[in-house]
Length: 315
Image: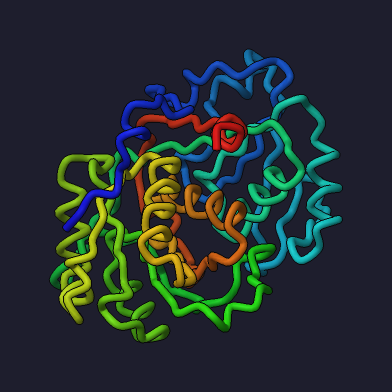
């Protein structure tokens, strides 16, 4: 097992902050908050609805279609078309955008992140941890939490379709692990990589002390296959920027390989993967698009604020 943190990363302060809750985040008066409502912890603080907050917020809804989302005025935004996303981003106004990825599916927030980076917009992302995950009533070995109803299957993340000629590359699969071992098994069965070409990432430290152990146990069978566990890297579960640097390190050691990154773990890790894929067009996001259970978590924990624009400028 190995840790892919670099010495310069450990010394340099990464542009992120942590607050006790979303209600504690000090938004600027010219900031627009874009958010969804897939889970209770993604809802705006109750006291904001009484007019005590001057923050302008834009709520997005999902339709079940992987290539669109819905605005409050019932307008559809197509994530197949760059012009449709840009029109939406221009319409929200504000000098700074804060994108709350907590209550949005990857196929909604990832295209927004890509276009915000491509257009050099000033923005931050925020993520609220769950207070607790919902435990399964009758769990099978390694299945602790009741998180997903089913998975739709692998298909491209909108705007992240890789079009480069990758004939000269072999594949290096980087699964960013969560608790759902069935998703890792499905990934390996679908891509059929050799064990030496699988570089799993485990969130250490986790949001809670015991979470890395749940991750290991939930994915034990798949990690044992072809001894993929020997390539495991440890990256802070709450830090997208550390994950970015970890992917960079893997790419340096496998310079002739195309990275196929599977963001099946924490959303902060998925954010780091999205930023990396924007900056490295030959990398491919491999995603199975699960349908999340609305009752998968209860309560909201700490709120993380990631200054993505500042991080991009530091690269």
